[in-house]
Length: 467
Ligand SMILES: *Cc1c(COP(=O)(O)O)cnc(C)c1O
Picture: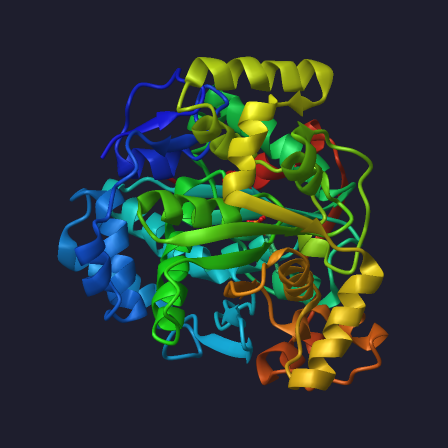
C-alpha cells in the first residue's frame, strides 16, 4: 500500500514512513493511494469478529505486510488491553432508532485513546527497530494531550511536548495532562486558543529541516494512523446494530472538531461499509455546518463553549475530505488551499455541494440546546451524556429522518466535563481514576503563543536525549 499527499508533491511512501512523516512534507495530508475495497462477503465474515480481530483485519489493508502479522497482532492486543470494557467500544441502545457508541472506556476516558494507545505502542515499536528516538509534538483542545501522554509515558526513546490553550480546557483534562511526573513529558499552556497551537505546530512540521533534525513526530489527527484506527469502531458498531435491524444503511452522528473522527467514518464508507448519512455535529464553532449547508468554508470568531474539545475553527482534516470531493486531484486541492490561505475561505460549486450533501448532514448545536439534551436524556433514559456526545445526540434529533437508524458517537465520559454537567443541576459520581487526580501536583509552564518561545522549550526537552 502506497500513500500520497493531498497536494501531490511527495513521492509515494509506505505505511511506516507515513506514520513518521505525519504532516506531508509538501504541507498536505497523507492519504492511501487507493482506498481498499472490502467486498460484501468479507464484511459478512468480519461481522463476527472481536474488536481486536476486526482491528487486525482493517489495519492489515494499510500496513500491508510492513509489520509482521504476529507483531501487528501483539501491538493491537497490547493497545486495547488497557480498556475497561471487554468489547472495547460497546454500543448502547437509547431509543428505538438511536444507539450510542461508547468510545470512552480507555485510560483517559475519551475516544482519542482508541487511536493513541495504538500509536504510542507503534512509535515505541518503530523506535526499537530503528534505534532512533521519537520526539512527539502535539496541540490539543484537551483530550488528545492527555491521551497521547498516556499512550507514550514511560516508553523508552520517546519524549513528548503538548501545547494546550491556557484556561480553556476542563479541570479534569488539565489534571490528566499535567499531573504526570516524568522528565520526558512537557506541558506548555499557551496564552491563546487551540487554533493558535495547531497553527504553530503545523508551521513547525512544515519546516522539514527542523522536523528531521529533532526526529519530530505527530500525534494529531494529521497523522493517518489516527484515522485508520478510528475506522474500526464504525465497522464494529455497524455490525452490532445490524444484528437488531433489517435496514441496510445506518447513519452516524459525530461530535466534530478537527473533522478527524468523521473523516474516519467517511473512509469506512468508501471502504464498503453501508453507512447512510454522516451527521456532522458541531457546537457554536460551526463553520463545518455552514459548509455542508451552503458550500462555504470560512473560519470565523473563536467561541468558548460547553464542549471545549470541539472548540476549533480550522479543521485540519478537512483537506483530506476535499481531496476526495475533488476526485483525488492534488492540483485542484493545492489551488483551493492556496486560495483559502489568501482569501480566508473556500467556496464550492453547486454541483460539488450536492455531492457533499449526499454523504453529510450537519447541525450546529447552541449551548442551551446542548444542556437541554443532557437533561432530557438523563431524565428520560437515565443515561448521562457528556456535552460533546450531547451535541451528537442533538444533531441526530435534527437530521435523522423517520425510519432511519442512527449511531451517535459518544466521544467522552461525562466525568471529564463536570463543569457542564453541574450546569444541568446533575450530580455525578466520578470514577476512581478521575477522583485520584485532584490530589496530585501539577507540572506545566505557561507560555506565549509564540513559535520562537516554544522552540526554545522544545530544544531544552530534546537536549535531554543522549541519542
Ligand atoms: C477530539 C474530540 C472531538 C472532535 O473530534 P475530531 O476528530 O477533532 O473531529 C469530539 N469530542 C471529544 C470529546 C473530543 O475529545
